[in-house]
Each structure stands twice: as C-alpha cells, then as structure tokens.
Image 1 (cartoon, rainbow, N blue to C red):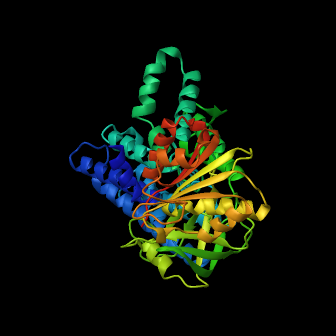
Image 2 (cartoon, one colour; image 1 turned 60 degrees about the vertical axis):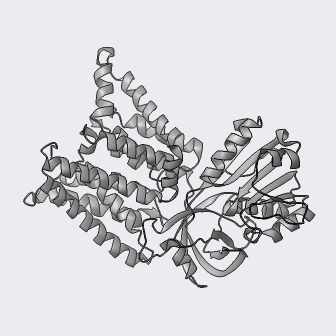
Image 3 (cartoon, rainbow, N blue to C red; image 1 turned 180 degrees about the vertical axis):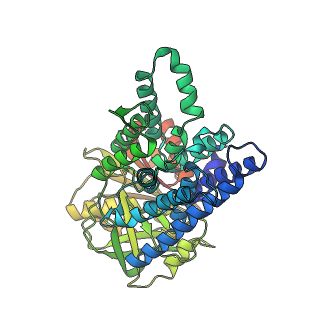
Length: 504
C-alpha cells in the first residue's frame, strides 16, 4: 500500500496535492449541503468561494505584473480555498460579510508581495488575511472545516498524505503534543474527556496543522527550528491561552510562529539568470546561472526553483532541486534529467535561453558533509548524484582530503553524469568511484553490471561498517537502501538520506 501511495506522491507536486485536498473538502461540503447534512447553504458556500477566488486572482495578477515576477497560480488557488474553508459562507446580500471575505483575500495575497523582505514573504497569507478582516470589519474566521464530523475522514487522510509528501511528521507531532499539554494544564481533570473530544472532532487543530502549519514558505526548513515552530504554534492554538482579555487563535499562533521561522530561515529570494546549458550525460543537463547576490549554502543543500511556466500542468511551476555546484564556484548549477513526455516545468526548462530568469527561495537541507572526519560512503541513483557533485567539488576546492567511496547507479553508461569531476577527484582526493550499470558491463574495473546491492557494497568496500552513509535518489531507491544498510548492521544514526519526488 505504501508503494502505491508513494508512487502517487512522487508524481504530484506539494502545491497540487494541497489544492486537491482543499478542493475535496469544499466539494464534499457542497454535496453535503445539497443533501441537508451540512450546516451551510451550498449556494452561500459556492458564492463565498467565488468571491474569495476572484479577489485572490485579481490581486495576484496585478501585483505579479507590478513586481515583474512569475505568478504561481496554484498558490493563489490554495490561498483562496483555505480561506473558503475557514471563513463563514455568506449570501450576496450580506455586504459587510462579503467585504470581510474580500479583505481577507486581498490582504492574504498582497502580503506575499508587500510584506516581504528581499522578495521572501514572512507571514502565512491566510492567517494574516483573516486577522486583518477580524480587526478591520469584525469578520473573524470560524474555522468551520474543523467542526464537521462528516469532513473529518478527508481532513485526516488528505492531511497524512501531505505530511508524507513533505516529511513533516515530527513537526506535526510536536504541534499536537504541545497543544495537548497546554490544554491539560489549563483544563480541570473532570473535563479532560470533553476537551480531547473537542480538540480532535470540533476544533481547527488538525486542519490548521495539515494545511497551514506545513506551508513551506513560512515554516522553518531545518529540523530543530521546525520542531520549535510546531511546539510554539501548537501551544498558542489552545483557546484558553490569553494575556489579560486578549485570547489567542490559530491564526494568531501561526503569525507568532512565522516570526520565529523568519528569524531562523534564510532571508533571501534569489534571481538567477541563465548563462549557459551544459550537457552532462544522456538526457542530463546542467543549467548554469548567475545569481543577483551571493548564495551562501552548504554542499548538498537545495533551493525551491520557480520558473515562468505560462500554462503550468498539475505539477506546477515550482520545484525543489539540490544545488549541483559547490559554494566556491562562481555560478549556481541546476542538474536536471529529462524523460519522455516531460511536464510543463521541464518543457519550460527545455525552451530556456541565456538571459532567461528563474527564482530561487527556501535555501535549506541537512544532507550536508559531517564536521567529523569519519570515512564516508555515497550512494547515488541517476540524477540523485547532484548533491555528491556539489560535495566532491567543494572538497577539491578547499583541499579537504577524506576517505570517500561513491557508488553510482544508472540504467545505461551514457547516463553517468559528472565523470570529469569524479575523475579529477580520484587524482586530487583519492576518491574511489564504483559505477553500477544495469544494462551491460564495461571493461573498466570500476564498472559493474547490475544494481547496487549489499553484495557489491561488501565486496567493494570491506570497511563499510566504519562509514557514514549518504543515500540520494528517487524515494523508492532511498527506502530500499535504508533496509539494505540496516541488514548490513549500519545504525540508522549513521545513514543520511535525500530523495526527490518524481522525475518528469
């Protein structure tokens, strides 16, 4: 079952997944309304959703044109659908309430452009929008999606898919735990049962955690800050938390948490201008960019790359890719492999010419070299070799000689990328490279027919038990090697993984 789930998640972007999630909740409540099973008039729900969507779309188009940046359409639809799920549905004659919806939508979208530093927005747009609507027009969010028992299965199942896609289970768990602890402290023992029922069946806790806490642009990317963020938002989301007569709400909790996230997250959004394209292997290319400001990163870290795909398909116009270059190199490299029937994102990349621009944000990742001098083993599958290209080039640039063996698997020998870098590293650093090629073997001693497996690791690296392992490639491959290395007796603490969701 997990393989089926991961197969689905590998072929859909996070943005499209969240959009499908929120759309399913809206659609289900509309149908429930028609059947008389919802507290809302389905006509009012539809009307409110259209008002919010229209305002979001218009404000986004206007500001994207004004700031001359690509408009992420899916981000607009997600903001609109979440607002429709937490703001009370209204009818066409309730002008004040319509104003509240419109103001929340306009402020939410505008905050992405206007409340940003170096083009990186600070606050969760939905949370900020509903706070302004509540203060200015006394039209607060009701978070009605959290109070529907009928919608709860979709809330939970869809939310778990989002967590698995983003690998944010720990942050979400800390968020729930903090909320439960603070609720227990502020509730009398005889009310614990009722409090638990309310938390999980008639509160915004779960939906807020799944759909808004995990929003990647305003949540910390590193592990420890993300746990602190989850704990802070969870604790402040308890309704009884207050300062004098001022009571906290989920949206206020998120805004406070966003301040923490902004402090610990990288502050910049990078404008990257394409200078040239280099072919690195069959179907593999490096896009070489000049950044508008220094990109201060560690080898193995990643960026969110946004391109101007005019008609983005279901995978959207934003992707996460590891930076293939080393920090000391003058240019920023994006290593990409193209497959048949590419997505609109990859089609746009194929049509790029020198002078075209992409935008990078959310610099993050802990798939980086250790500070210790442990022996290292790198295992790469396909284009998953890009973080190792960055690490190995960095080690050559700084003259850091250490014991490293790279296992690099591909279907064909022609698909092996960065051979020149690895050959130089063999001479300069003593890097040992073992190539595994599925289709046929070569005469070179470091080429092996077949896939990387436990036998190959033990045969080619007898001291494997002494090494730190780094595994990068498609998710299915990474999961497989976690099992293989566990069978070899490698402790989980000595394995670092990095996977990419999907290929096209």
